[in-house]
Every structure is written in structure tokens, then in C-alpha cells.
Amino acid sequence: MGDDEPQCRYCFGDEIDGPLISPCSCAGGQKFVHLACLRRWQRMVLVAQPTHPAFYTDDKRHHICNVCLARYSCPPPSRAELMESFTGPEIAALIDEGRLIAASPQFSDMLAADRNETDARLRRRGDDAYDFWFHGVYLITSVKEDTGELELPLTSSDKLESVRRQLTRDNASNEVSIDVQGTRFLLAPKGSLADVSPSDLGTALDALSAPATLVLVPSTPLSCGDDHVAAVCISRLLAPASTRLQRAEAAVERATSRLRQHYSNVDGALVVQHYAG
Image 1 (cartoon, rainbow, N blue to C red):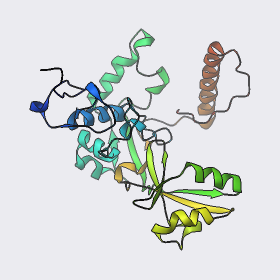
Image 2: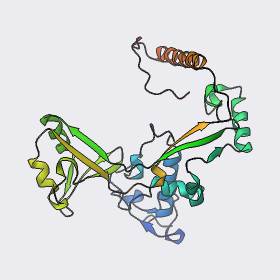
Image 3: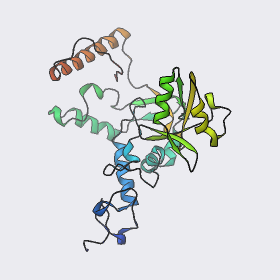
Image 4: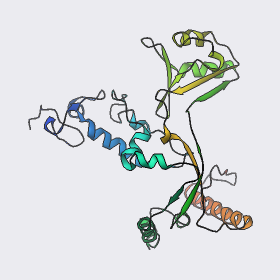
């Protein structure tokens, strides 16, 4: 292959291996990619994400090139579409209230081998993280749809002006948008702008005064892959509340001790925001 011939920056293949696209502002050897290779990269980003809804974020690498930092010209697949490529659409259809999720014997065996690893540095999880996964059975207790709407109550002129500065206006489409953790949101004719036509949102925003409420909606509608699913483990006996509290306090103390070993300025004023136990 000649030096001037375009090639994919991921697999180094050429157009014989598939059509090459230029999805960002990169030049030279970084300019071209196969769409399939880009999708594989985005899948890798997805599986590296935590699955707990409190910690999952729409990684900006789905939308923005990590080399030139330009937004990809080809919209990335949604989280639901990427997950469907792993599980198939029939799995998503089974997630419903009253159904069970169970760990397969193979999965439990893999966790057992990992937990029994004598070198703690080679374990994927801490000792306490395995208890509810071995041969676990979970009953889905609720499935709640997430529309993705964000309501912003702006109680002062300073807060309103701060949001105005962060919003981006597209004169061609009359859209007013903002990026939040890699997801593009559009200003909607709701809240304090409920009676405004979509084409006049920018003008109405300039004339708005505090207190006001702005409503943002995702530029791409959410799907069942974004639903909030709650489930309870029914394969383990629940310890008394006093025992669970003692375990939680001990876990917090172990975490605090580890922090103090690494950071000399940690004092006793620590706040637990989430306890996965």
C-alpha cells in the first residue's frame, strides 16, 4: 500500500476491506476509518461503562473524536442499539415487571474462580462484591420509562445568564442546544417557554427574566434501553437490619482507612454518597 493511499486508522485496512469515511476533522493518517471499526470502538466504550444508573454516563467518546475533539459527522448508535447488538432484541423485550434475572452456572463458576484468586491484584472485584452474584436470582420489581427531560429551575438572574452562555444556537435550524455529559439536549417550548414556537425560542430566551424554568429534551429520543429497572435478590436470606448496618459501617471504615493511607489531608468529615452493599 502506498503512503498516500487512504487507510483506516483502526485496522490499517483500505477500501478493499470496506468503504472509508472521514467522520471528524482529523487529517493525514488519522483522517479515514471504516464505519464498522468506529462502531467496534464505540462498543468498547460502552462495555467499559458502569451499569448502575447512578453512575452510567453517555461517554463523550461516542460523539466526539478523542484525537481532534470534533463531533463525529455520523451520529453514534444509541446505548439501546449497542446493547441490542450484544444481546439481541428478544432480551430487551423480556425485561418486564415480575420476570426473573438469573446468573448462569458458567457465570457463577467464573466468579468463583475469580474470588478464589490468591493474588488480590488479579481480582476484578473486591471480596464483598461477589456475595449477591453467585447463583443469584433477581425479581424485577419495577420498570420505569425515562423520557430524558431535564427541568432547570433558575431562581436568579445570575443562574439564568450562566445557562444562556452555555447554550449553543444554530441559525440554520433555529435549534438551541447544550451538551451534558456527551449527550446533546435541545431547548424545548415548555416551562417558562411553553407558549413559544420552536423557531422563536432563541429570541424568547433572550427576553426571559428570572425566576424561570427551562426544559431540555434529548436530541435523540430515549428507548427501552434507557429505562430504570429495579430488582430484588430472592436467592439470599436478608440479614437483620442491625447486622446489615454493622456491615455497612465496617465497609465505610475500611474505605476511609484506604483513603487516609493515600491522602494526608483527609479528615473525619467524609460523606457517603452511594453504598453498593
